[in-house]
Each structure stands twice: as C-alpha cells, then as structure tokens.
Length: 121
Image 1 (cartoon, rainbow, N blue to C red):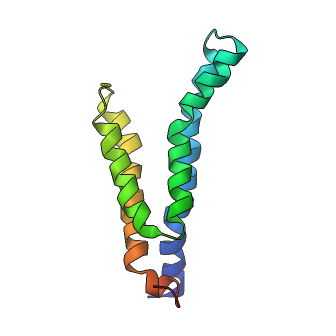
Image 2 (image 1 turned 90 degrees about the vertical axis):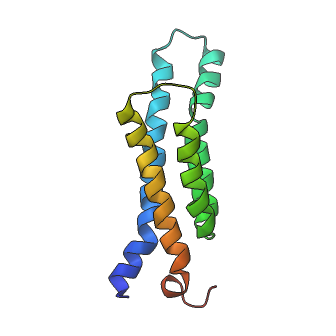
C-alpha cells in the first residue's frame, strides 16, 4: 500500500468524524430561537448537544481502538433510524449515511492496522 493511501485511510475517518460532529452540533443552534429562560436555554442546549457528545466520545475511543468505531457508528445509525420520530427520508440519508461510512472507514482502519501503524497489533 502506498504511503499516501495509508495516510488517507488513516486520517479519513478521523477528519470526517470531526466534520460530522461539527455538522450535528449545528442542529443545537435552534435552541436560541426558542423563547426560554436562560437556565432552560442552557439545559435545552445541553440536551441538543448529546448526539455531538456521543460522536466525539466515539471518536476519542476509536482513535486508537478502530474496532470500536467500526461497531459503534453503524449502531448509532441504526438507533437513529429506528427512533419513533418520522423524519423526511433525506434526513435519514444525511445523518445515517455518514455514520455508516464512518463505520466502514474505521473497520478498514482496524483490518489494515498493521499496514497503517507498523509495530501495533
């Protein structure tokens, strides 16, 4: 495997996960358009940032343990897809699609771990 391909395969899931966390955090901004008291607004903002916190936590663990990302991100997508809310199908594609892609990329990292990081198992 070429060095540039190794670097791309190693960094792609990590960078895309950071971008996805930033994307999901944008949805929390709707809290500021609600007529809430300051304490309620802080609580609502915290609740709206739970999905972002899950993604950041998963990235933190997956950075060194790629198998976790390979399992967790698809499970997160399935959890989101099976919730009771009825969203537009495009919303599921926009949210769940990247989660499945992240799972595949972390799986590839896990499978190719020896080639990507010599000296590790």
